[in-house]
Image (cartoon, rainbow, N blue to C red):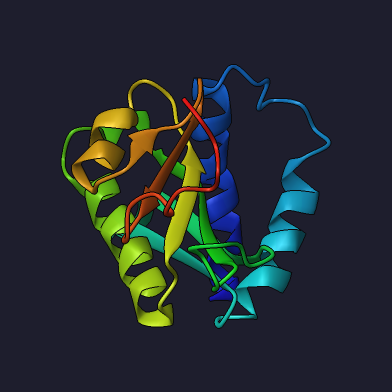
Length: 156
């Protein structure tokens, strides 16, 4: 819901720092919060989930629907993308990120999305792998419910 935009932006700062960005730069938080307000008002295309402890947001993440062109073996060009998975450092290892991630994957499942992508830190990788994601590159991971598409005429 749009009211969660400020909390999601605050949690995003933890993720940005974990990925080596300077989250103290003054130019990103305001536009990020405004963009989250706009996107969260489109629940059929964008979702954000939070875990609160004693009224304080301690873990969160967002996901959105992307439309890619259909391809052989993937006639549904829709893909999901998960971003800003983050937990306040004082609340790590309590299962909160797993709750957020499970809610996002459930949302994609309700939409019937056949593929979900994300970028990950080393610390986040075990969580995503436990949901069936696999490494596709240095920071990219992907999950698919049907495995790789049938042969595309490539030779190995």
